[in-house]
Image 1 (tube, rainbow over the protein chains, first blue to last red):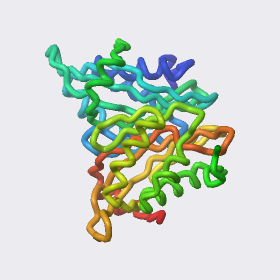
Image 2 (cartoon, rainbow over the protein chains, first blue to last red):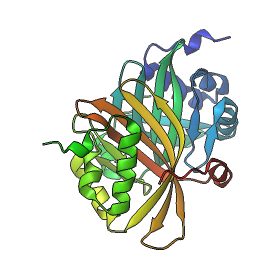
Image 3 (cartoon, rainbow over the protein chains, first blue to last red):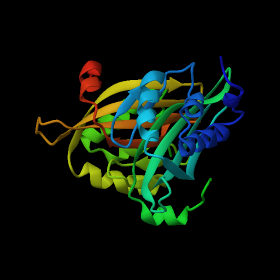
Image 4 (cartoon, rainbow over the protein chains, first blue to last red):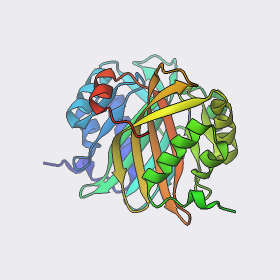
Length: 141
Length: 141
């Protein structure tokens, strides 16, 4: 059964839901962003690759225990009718601590299916890009 | 002027040309794989982001001086009519040394334009995935 929350009309909505779910530690909503029709893969900044919804869920379950919040800066977008790729910069905060961690670069791949736009791949890695980071600064939430 | 070498009829051909060009230290062919119509971005395993053809070229120019060869293992593909995303695993060799380095995970994004399929994004990072790496082992070249 698909929850109404996962009917994303644009990849941007799926992206916002994804990062907001991380900030709330909401694994159920986070998983509702991933495609159930396409193969899904998540490469964490540790270099670990999670394949399929079950591995992806297990990977995020352990990440969410850290109580992360994520500030997201869109960097690049490539979009077609049924597929979109977003490169974003993520700055992480742990719990209530205001110390920024990262930044990370993430390539998020979305596909449009029967239930709207869904995430099929999230590839996230440590960035060294301080100069560009400042120039591009635009916090999504 | 576009060279005939860059008329790739499928993203797979662009991918082979890209990695073979790295192996030959052939910057001209490597650059012919990148799109001239779309914004291009390259995130190197160092965490550096190169934006636009000129920065991408400069980034690869310094990489190619290392005399790398790359063995590529396709891991996942998502393809639509005009956009394709490939997650691959790369194993690097320096010069004639048979010692493998890496592996890396790379998310390669291709778009089909007026001159066939071209690379628009290459996001490459250190992997820790020894178990999957062995299971998936299939060397492209």
